[in-house]
Image (cartoon, rainbow, N blue to C red; front, side, top):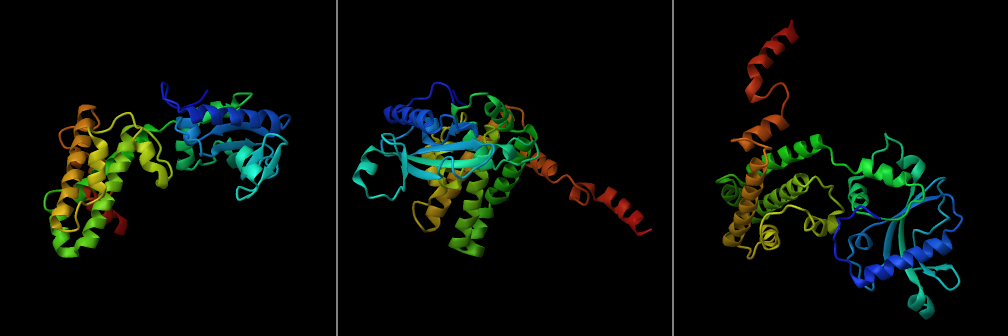
Length: 303
């Protein structure tokens, strides 16, 4: 049971590690009524575990206690003992099961006004439900991980606006001349970040931890063709000269064009996606397109 995509391929190590987690729950958590749910995250959820992977999971507790499960430890099934992950005991390292738990207070997390961090939404949205006897936690997770359509549109508008500002004809070329290679490449890095935001928003998926973001991105349902090779060039210049810089620009522009084409075909934008995104994202008094009305209100403000 879980939230991960159906039909995913599971490594043999994943099957072994899931059984190890089940064994831990059956022996170490039996009778622990404070444990409301255990949700496998990371590779145990995606099915990509290796033999040397530790077991990552979120444990929801109510009432909360630091002393029901450790944050990280090696657990020995033979005697149920917990050991430091830095233990040099050969038996512990050989026979133990390494656990890495994020422990949360379910009494807090189930409150409607408690904001779940986006990285946790990403983890829980693709998590593997290892334990949830009442189904309460699963039901709340299913509700909370839904990606709001208003947020999706707002993030798409933001990404489209900034990608255009960084990549429009002449801008990257001018930045190389006026700001120099370092800052010019940094501007491209910003464009790369907006591209990533747009791809996650297109798919209605939360962004995970930055250090593992690419793994999540490559699992998105819709991506431009040959995305791995194109993203590699978009994020990394093949040389440090102007030619290498412009190779990055070309890769980013090509990916942006594919994104815009998909958004128009799917009806997110009409004939002028740049203008539509900018106006909708900056809809407030005092902008270029509403200065006449702003001036009228400004005059009345002074009366």
